[in-house]
Image 1: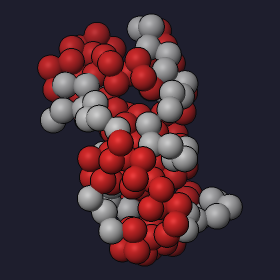
Image 2: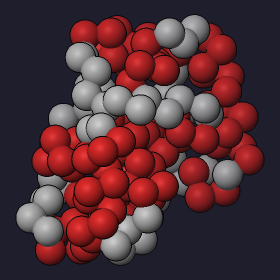
Image 3: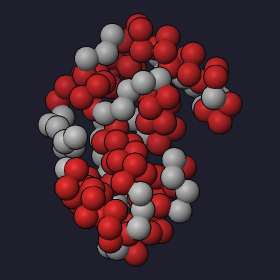
Length: 138
């Protein structure tokens, strides 16, 4: 899925506007411009955004590629220990559902989710992740 980079402001406030000023308006474009460590460093040098923040935005954009995963669920996956699409591919749905529930209970900003994903939904995410090619290298 392709989202506006403003969706990334929730994890790194202000990053969306800085990226837009450098003609990166979508998460797909961000992945294209920051998929490798060398490209992330180049982007950091141009934008003055720390590489750590760019990497976090890139991993968020990576998780947003999974069908059915929006910004809030991508954040929830991160705090549950799923950093990348590749990580998601190898997760056990029952264990991940439990980890997500624990993460949501610990992080009050994520408690606003109307509905935590069910194990069935998590299974669909995992199957979707298995179909995606790797976009990010470390």
